[in-house]
Length: 294
Image 1 (cartoon, rainbow, N blue to C red):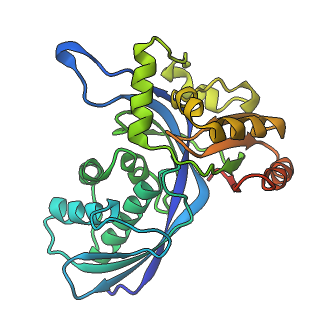
Image 2: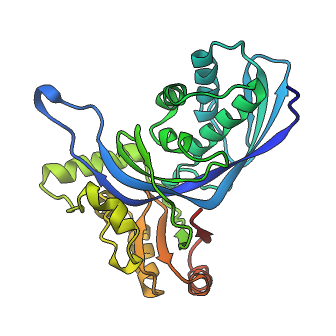
C-alpha cells in the first residue's frame, strides 16, 4: 500500500465530572488512584504530519515545545510494533501543537492515539481491542479513551478505574466551552500529592453516584452536579485558577470547572452567541479559547 505524507488530527478532551477515589490501604494497597469521569472531545487539536522513510525508528519534530527523546509518540510507536510483531517501519512525525501542554486536556495522549491510527494505515493493518489496550497501557492512562474514539479521534465515554475502563456514550455536540489557560501549570504528580493530603485530613468533595453520570450529562447543564476532586486543592495553591473560575461565573456560564488535574478551566454555554461574548470579555484579561464539543 502506497503511503504519502498525511495529516492526522488529535483532539483535546475535557472532563465532565472527575471523582478521584482514595488509594486503598492495607493488604489490598493500590499504587494508583481510581477515577470516575466523563471524557468528551472538543474541537481544539494538535496536527501530526506523518511521513514514511527508510529508517527503522520514529523521529518527532516539534517546533512549539521541546520534547524528551522518549515521549508518548515514541512509546506508542514502540508498543505498536511490539504487539503486532511487524518489522519496524521508519517514520517522521512533525507535531504542530494547538493543545496547551500540561493543561489537563489530554494532548499527549491524543497525539499517541492519532499516531496509532497513522501506523495502522501505513502498515495496512487493523488492530483489535486487546492490541489497542496494550499500546495504551504502555503509553498513558488517558490513551485508553482516545483509542476508543472514532476514526477521526472524536468521542465521548464514561471512564473509570485507572482510565482503562471505557464505555462509549452518545456525545453531546450542542455545548460551547470557553477554555481559560492560566499561566501557572499544574503538575499531575503534585496534584495527586495535594489530594492525598486533603483526604488524610478528611476533606473530600461529595460526588454524585457514577451510575448517574450519563443521566446528569444529558440533563440541562444548569442542573449538572458534577465535581472535580482536584479543584479545591489546586485552586487553594493556585490563585489564577481560583480567579479564572470566578470570572467564568461572572460572565454567565451554565457550569464551570477545571479539566483533569488542571490547569485549564472551562465554562459551559448552550448558546453560541453568549459563549462568543463571554470569550471576548474574558480575552481582555486571560488567554482563552472558544471551543465546541465534538
